[in-house]
Image (cartoon, rainbow, N blue to C red; front, side, top):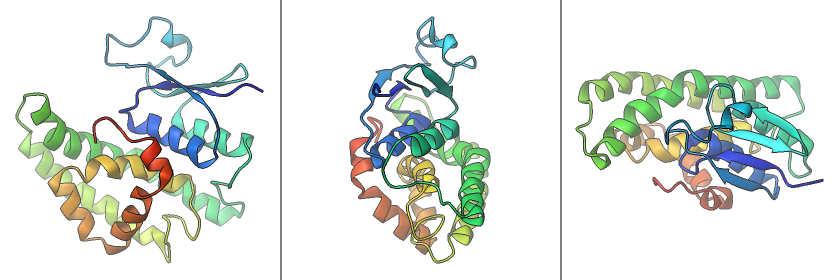
Length: 212
C-alpha cells in the first residue's frame, strides 16, 4: 500500500484540515504543492478537482476531492485513534459542527476578518472596515453556537478529539490573528480554553501555515 498524496497549498485552511487528520492518525503522506491562485494551478489539476479547488487526494489510485470526504476516508481507512464517534448521536453532533463551520464560520472568520484585517495590509491595500464590522455579529453567532454545542467538552464534540476540532482549528488559527477575532474569542471562555489546548497540539505545529 502506497502513501497517500495530498494536493494543495500549505496556506490553505482546508488543506490544513486534511493534513491535521493525517497527522493525528500518524499517516505518512506526500504533499504536492498546488497554488490555485497562480493562474488556476497546474493545467492537469482539473482532472483531480473539476471545480479547481484544494485539496485533492489520492491513495492507491483512489481519488477524492472535498475536504470532508478526505478526512472521513483518512479516519476510516487507516489505523490510529478514531476521529469520529461510533454512537449515532455523537457522530451527528460532529457532522453538525462540520456543517456549521463550512456554511457559516469559514467565510466570516477567514474572508471577512483575517483576509481584510491581516492580509489586506500585507498585500498593500486598506482593509474593508465595513465588511469587518458587518462580519462581527455573524462571527459572534458562530462562536456562541459552537460553545453551546460543546456541552461539557473539553473538545468541540465531547470528551475526545474529533474531526470537528480538526476542521475548526485552522479557521481559528487565522481568525485570532485579527484583533477583532482574538477579542471575540476571549469573550467565549470554553472556546478560548479549547483553542489554547488545540494550539499546543503537535499536529498544529507540524502543519503550521506560512501566513501565521
